Structures are given as C-alpha cells and as structure tokens.
Length: 213
Image (cartoon, rainbow, N blue to C red; front, side, top):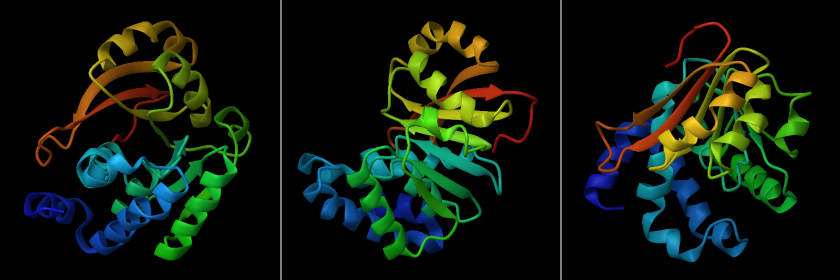
C-alpha cells in the first residue's frame, strides 16, 4: 500500500484499519489459493476492490441491517462491515467453498454483527428482511433487481456497484424496477472526495422515503 492509498484507507477505516489490512492479507493469500480472487488482482486489492467497495457506506444510514447478495470474497459486504461496526450485515452466498472462507475470515477478524447465509438470493427472502441490499458484479441490473429488491420486503434501498454503463442499465431495468415497487432509481458517485476513481453506484429506493445515509 503506497502513502496515498494508506491515507485514504485510514480516512475510511479509521481505528479499524488493522482489520482491513488483515482482510486484505486473507484476500491475497487464501483468497487466491481457493479461487476467490485472481492472482493478478493482488497489486490493486486496495484501490480497485476494498476502498472501491467501502466508500458506499456513505449512503447507508446508521444501525441499518445490510444484506450483501453474492458476497463471494466479501466484496462489498465485509468491507462494509469492517468500515461500519454499527451495521448488522448478512452475507448471502450460495457456494459452499466461498461460505466457508467467509466464515473463517469473520472468525479470524472477530467481526460481530456479521453472519453468512448459504443461499441464493431468491431463497433468502424467507429469512432476510433488511434495510439495505448491496451487490457488486452479480448480474445486469434488470436481473439483479428481481434478486435483490424482494429482500427489502417493501421498504429500503438497493446499492449496486456498477461501471460506466450504469445509466443504460437503469434505463433497461426501468420496467422491472417499477414492477418490484421501486419508486426511484439514480446513478450516484461514492468516494468522490477521497478516491482518484470514485465508485459508481445505482441506488434504487423502495417504499416510503427514509434515511439514506
């Protein structure tokens, strides 16, 4: 981690920076060995992955219950949990080897308020009722909303980390968003004041207006 990245990481994680560093160490070792992260990603774990994910916490209200769909290597779910200990985080992941890895990392870091649910998103609807759903690199938005919005049970918000095609995805998913009760969909930027390349986020709100971070 270079000096500038270290400065940004300290600003985002504050007194929990050591936990973030240990998480990155897991990604760079067992995460690669067990196929959760490609070896070429090691030099950019902080900038492209961890910090890129952690900044979306600026849109999450205090003490919220967050469900992260398709958690994989904990991106963004574990980044959120480390940066914001006030949140309750449920990591939803269907693949056993990823679930086992997530559970090992959570135990090693001693993270409280974080649980792993081995399930597909559509199966998790029966047991998860959250305030915020997050997702990164899961699927195109028109499909993603069908997997994620039901977890809000009529009230809350989806924060989907997207790329340059975010606005086009919102337009393509407009009908599905309305059908699932979405009352607004917007493309936002997270981390503009700290990241050289801010994170593009699609925020879809469902139900009554409320705190949005």
